[in-house]
Length: 235
Image (cartoon, rainbow, N blue to C red; front, side):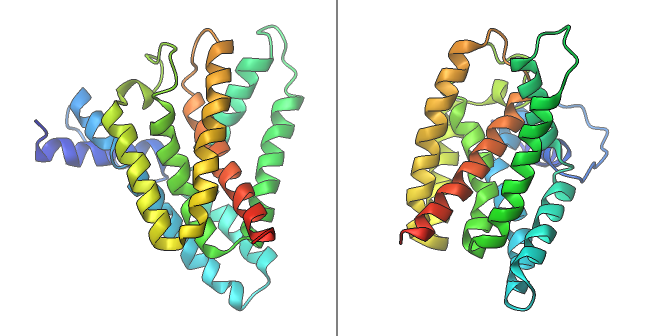
């Protein structure tokens, strides 16, 4: 049974892992702290998205491209670019042999992701920008059901259960319906496509690197934004 201590410590652990807020505390951590804290990930995504919303409002005053830059800077600062760095590490682990120090492809991949963020943040509605972090963090928990590899080296996935995935799935759809029911199409397609990709990815690797968590979040967010833009073009 969860106690107040689990809720408090779990929240701090999630903040330390995924945001710039490196809050120090001296309580001993237990597995139950992490298990409870993981439930807060979709909610953390919503909070991060609300920060983007506050900046996006200025699109009505300033150039959208300028606001897109501000949102991207905000995202990098609030997350300490942890997910982008993890994406770089995951790509490097997968495609490069250990004795090869060249890092051109990984660098280009991350640069492309950054450019996509900048362009999509500039072009898309504030609703899609708000929902992107919710989708990213929620999908991390949902994808845990599809990954069959040993997760012992991961920070979050090893604690994920079916209950976490169900909560993330329901929460993301409820929030999306409230904010913009049309974007449930982008949300559904994001989960389907990332599920197919993760199933393929899981079949090709032997060891699941801990940085995979950041890759899942970034791919989910970018894919959701791209699909939302396509939906916007053909609405």
